[in-house]
Image (cartoon, rainbow, N blue to C red; front, top):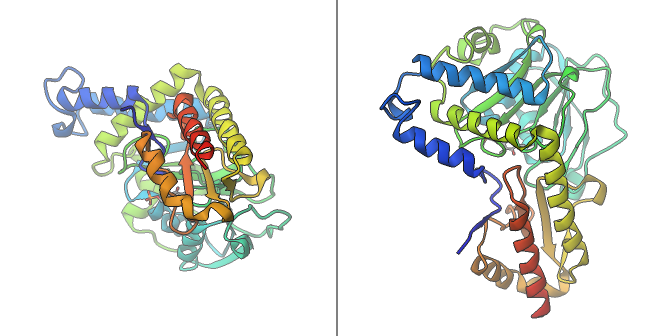
Length: 355
Ligand SMILES: *Cc1c(COP(=O)(O)O)cnc(C)c1O
């Protein structure tokens, strides 16, 4: 039976990415060796690394003066590396969920952290608005897409302060005005590659302004100066990332992804709103295009397990909601085909008819 992959992360990748990665694991670049056993300094892999960084810049239209880094440690290590490198006195943070609050916790180790607003009061079901960011902040940090709660800040804020964002789960789903940012980061396992790779876009002039000493491996400069080859980078995920980036380009680039992602989300939210069994958990204007969270209406609450079983029998995988929200979450990343979203919708309709 065809499986429909709605996992939140690691998550669906294009068939192009998976097939080409599998082939390179057998025989990389015609070398007669596996991608798993070649030097990261071989000319064949250096070419992959260079092309992946170049294509990353091209697709996102990253202006001059920025570098793209491929690191380890996950987005979670960035919660610490960002303030280590950029927070001198004070930084402002927006608290929109679990990931944002983890970033806040780490930043507090490095200086004054001003939380400008939080949506914790309503279990993170909306994105706060109307807050002010003090102009003397070294930067303003936000999580563009809240993977767990399913809310999204889908534009680049207009502020006098430089921006830093965790875009782990919505990078490449819309054009980004990178020039407003000092730094953007994410774990690759949501819209790019298998787990093990962290990508960072950093404005080089933003570095070198903090008073503290920074350990070599945690200093962005170390990695920027060596094209992310200071130490052994995650070779296989970088290869896969290149495949995904090539696939994005073939599909028509970010605008094509945006169109498809917005259509997929729209048809699923329409069904969530229409179906008598379900309702969405997030304020309508803040709903994520990437992670659609919904729960069963109170009078049908006891059907939740039954729907889970019904959906998995129909081939749906990974729709269980995060434990802090409950219910269901369908993640609709860039590689998600419309046919899978339609299959989930059909499943919701069938289940409604039976009840
Ligand atoms: C998944 C996720 C993280 C954590 O990423 P790791 O690579 O596991 O550290 C951080 N932020 C957001 C928005 C995420 O979706």
